[in-house]
Length: 341
Ligand SMILES: *Cc1c(COP(=O)(O)O)cnc(C)c1O
Image 1: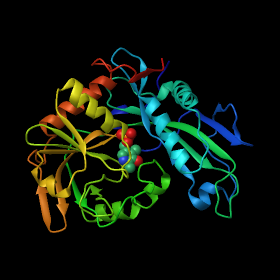
Image 2: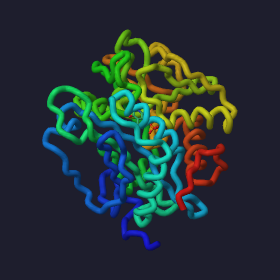
Image 3: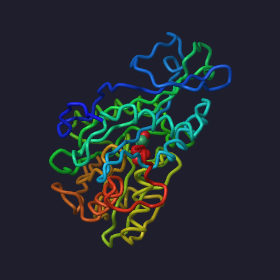
Image 4: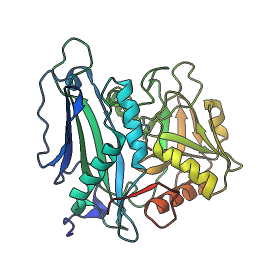
């Protein structure tokens, strides 16, 4: 397979059209068998449920070339299960989990020429998503849906090393108690745009959202879960019904416990405690872990002891171990690596 002529090391995190995408349609109560197609555009009713009432959800995962030359994805079964729970919460039909994994594999295989080579730092980002496609004007769920998977090569997240981020405590909320914060709904992102644009204008990289009910507990950022390390090397990660269950964060917990022998606590984390932590990172598929160096709460600043130049030592070990597992340099727990070819 001849790879496309792409400058892998200098790719950014942007959309690049690739050759094939998977499309399946839901109509009259059933999914059709779906197909890989070449047309990158979508044609739907001007009154489609997704356009009027935002009935859409998505997933995000990556395909990698491992050290021994296989193309793999990381725990796609968890993405399938999470899409299922998003669909159920949004009154959308579930795309069967085995079919989800197959569609992801087929789309990656069809775009093999775009899977970055091992060692380039780049990966093939995979975006499965679903939306209500027929006309809906009275507020109700759509009757017809489209499930699609496209891929796009993305560059190394940290060019020239991971620079710790400066984040601020947001005055806006991300998710209501008993709302949709725990599912991967497009609407969660639409309402976060104002807060992130405002944060960037003021010189911050990200927003830290607190629990909207009491504003005393740490939730997450717009698109990544928090992971903290205590001064005695315990890994602490916030537990809440309104944060999105990050697959990266859940995997890092296993890595911390089973590979690094660290104690892990999944529990409510008071903002009050944050000043006592030694390290802080943001977990998500895009960057695996982005280190946080500083957290600004209005006129107060918390400077993490790990500093503003590099990842903290435990964060670095977690990052190196998980990326080692993903790239096939370290043996993975059973079922974590899904080989495509
Ligand atoms: C997708 C997402 C994450 C990260 O989840 P991963 O499965 O690790 O990529 C975290 N928070 C939010 C709000 C998300 O949408």
